[in-house]
Length: 183
Image (cartoon, rainbow, N blue to C red; front, side, top):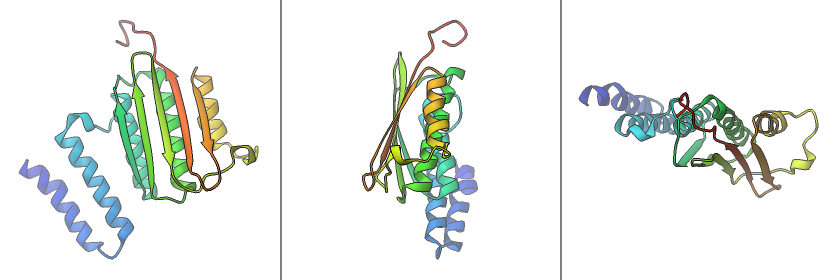
């Protein structure tokens, strides 16, 4: 434990001291260290691709690191990240990225419900919002990377947003029928 604390926490604290004048860098370093510690202390906080919840946490970590915002993930239930469920993680990552780029807020919330029948993910920000009907046809992010992706894989996606009211992306994908290969 002492070696891990030295190699991660103490080194991060030293970097934070050196960057004390840069609030964004300090915040990014602190969030990354918090993720690392949680992953190390609690197996349920992993950020790898083994399960849907851990893959969502991993996507959130990437968005946090790339865009300097806070992404909080809460998952109720979990399951192996079967190939047929990867599209919902990819669509959720795109929704998180869009919120980071366009919402104008420093926080995105992700809530996942994973049960025997399906995976549902809600990505919400309380930022600028937008009129989904006013998005030009040549803007493909929401339309292609979220909506069409979910439809192609047998799921659904819904965008709820309005100017000044934030945005919520609702994703749902049925889970595959259990077989010897994916159970």
